[in-house]
Structures are given as structure tokens and as C-alpha cells.
Image (cartoon, rainbow, N blue to C red; front, side, top):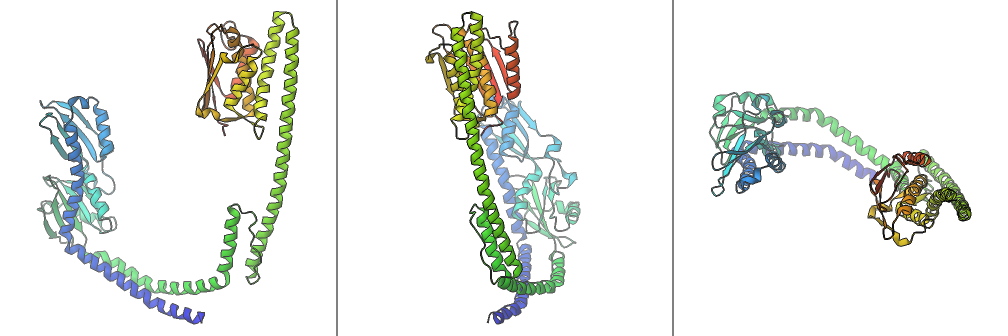
Length: 525
């Protein structure tokens, strides 16, 4: 029954296709005849669509003329603003009540030449002027429009009607032209050389010796005219008829063969392929347990494809479980390593603290304090890192607060002596390899300020994020930082600072009591 129904459909396809082609061709001929009969109406509508640009320009000029002369002090800015609103405008002039030029601007010749197939000789012969004057302010605004811009709306409105256009000046000069690329554009451009055709009165129609229908319409509110032309129908339809005769039989045969193959493939192959494709989609969307299953009635090749996919999916599932177990073990070992490093650093800092307390000489105490502060900086970075889930990333704001808290205790400063402020973007996360050098740098920058802090003074630390991290440290006006530059530069401290800054691709500048540290956050999560 299915085969008999299919044979009926296949037998009816060829005459139906031919009938559809005849109907479509008849409709095409009818529409072409309607274009010829309503050609003057076309020309009138074309003029109205072009007039919308002029009306909009007149409104803009009237609005400018109602302003004050001081509004045009920055002539270039006013011209650019006008170009933003009306890209068709290429010339702008403002004169006062005494006919003095207040503002005058024009685009360069090469930036206002027409686009598309506008004929080169007619480019920039003149612009289409639009003027408005205000009797109250005495200001007159003149705006020149690019001629080809007035054809943009007609081209878009009649793109499928094979109509060509030309914009004529009051003296009959061709300012801009457009010829349909699917026809003979040179024929229309040659016709424009005829003086009688360019002098055609508005609202009149004429048929040329080449069979073209030509009509002229006045641009409302101006002395400019738009000349429209349509090619003869016979020339337009000849290639379509020849192509239809040549392709009708092959296309019909191809349609029959396609339907036959479609039926066979749907019956014996496509339903299995769709099932396999749906399984692929589910697997690709994250459903890792999706399987093709048994395809007992499918062809051997398709059945083998389903079995192969199921085997591959099972192997990927086994390997994924192994990789997840290995990753979990690696993360556990990493966290254990960081934990032991943190404990070791804590032990070292405790030993340095006890040694410092037992030292009697000021030089010994100072040296031990510097070593203790550097160890405390590293230990703070590891503590913040250990507090995260992965143990390899450090929150920028948390790192700064932890380092400040660690360095404040050896300096015996109260917590209220240091103020830390952070913006919303300072919650960026940096890798531990960058957190340790940053902690080192803070351990070099902050202790001198803590030591130089006078009673009643406070230290302000501002942390900002974004594409780069910026730390601004201020306070302690009597500071004598010897980390970078100056005659009293500490050699070891300066070398360490430069090494840390190079490692972070960062910069550090000090102007008076303000120190600014900036580093890129290319490793931000």
C-alpha cells in the first residue's frame, strides 16, 4: 500500500512542478506589466521617499537656527554631531544676522564620493542644499546633502523591481545615478547623455527608442528632479524563459529520483541514523550514560557503528573515573604539602621570634626582625592559600589583610593603626606563585612605615582590582624607605625588591609618603 501511494505521488510530481512553474511565470509577467502601467506612480513614490531625507534635514536645520551664536563656538564638534545624526550631510554653514559666517565645515572630496555603481563623472558636481533661517535669532543654517544619499531610499524600496534612478539638478546636470546591476547599466547611463531626456518635465512619462520607460518627478520643496527608468519587459524575460526551458526536464527528473531515494533511505537507514544522532547529542550535552543499544534490524554497517560508539563511551567512562580518582589524590597530596610547608614556616617564625627576644644587641634584633618579617610574609600567603578549596589560589584582598596582620605583631602596633580599604574588584584570585612574591614585597614595604609611625598617625592601604591590581600605601610622613633608590639604598633589600617586581611584571613608585604598587592580573580567575 505504501509503495502504491508513493508511485501516485511520484507520478503527480512532474505535472505539478510544471504547473507551478507556469503559474509563477504568469505572475511574474503580470507584475512586470503592472510596473509599466503604474510607472508614473512609482516615480511619485520615489520622490516622496527621497523627500523624507530633505524634510528631516530641514527640521534639523530649523532646530539649529533657533539656538544662539555661542552654540557654534566649537564648529567641528557641531559638524560631527550633525554627521552622527545625518550621515548624508557633507556641508554645513551657519551665518549670523549680519551675514557673517559663524561656522563652516565640509568633508574632504574623497570622503563624500558616491558608493555602488554611481557614475564617476557626476560625483560631487554639487550638493543638494537645504536652508533654514530664524527671524528671531537671525541665524541661517545651510546644510548640503550628498546627492547619492537621496537615492538610497528609492533603491531599498524598489530593489526587486529592476528600476534605475538619476538625480538631476535644476540645470539638468546628473548629480548621482543608480543602475540595476542585473540589467544593462550602461544603456541607462548612455540615455542620461540625451539633453531632451534630462529636460523631461515632472509628472511626465516617455518611452525611449531602446524600449525603456522613463518618468520624471520633482523633489518636493526643491527644483531638483529624480529621473526613473525601467528596461523593456522582453529584454528582461528572455534569459528567464531560456533557462526555464533548459532546466525544466532535468529538475523534474532530479525531483523524482530524490523522492525515490528519500523513501528508500527513510525506510532502511535514516531512522537508525536519527537514533544514533540523538544518542550522540545526549552524550555531547553531558549525559555520559547515553548508549545506542541494540540495533538488531539495522544494516550491518549501522549496527557496527552503534556498537563502536557504545564501546568508546564505556572506555571513556572508565578512563574518566580513573582520572577523577587520580586528580582527587593529587589535590589531597598538594594540600598536605602546603599544610606541611605552612607548619614548617610557622616553626621557623617561632624560632626567629624567640631568638630575637633573646638578642641583646640592636643590630642583632634588627636583622632577626627583618628575617622574621620575610618568613611571616611567606607564611601568610600559605595560610590564605590553605584556606581555599584547591590550595593553589589566593584571594588578593585576603592576602593583603593576612600579611598586614602578620607584620603588625612584630612591630607591636595596635590594629587600629592600619586601615585597609578595598573596592568590589579586589576579590580577584591570583595563583600562589604570584602571591608569595607579593607577600615578599609587602614585607619589604610595610615594616619601615610601621617603625616610622608617630603617635596618633595611621597607615592607609587602598586595594583596587580590575585588569591590574593597585596597592597604594600612605601614612608615616617621617618614613625613610631604603628599599629602592636613594643614597641610603639597602643593597640586599633593593635586589630582592627588583627581583620580586620582575617576577610579577609589576612597578613600584614612591612619591613623598605615598607608595604605589601596580601589577597586571593576567592570571586572574
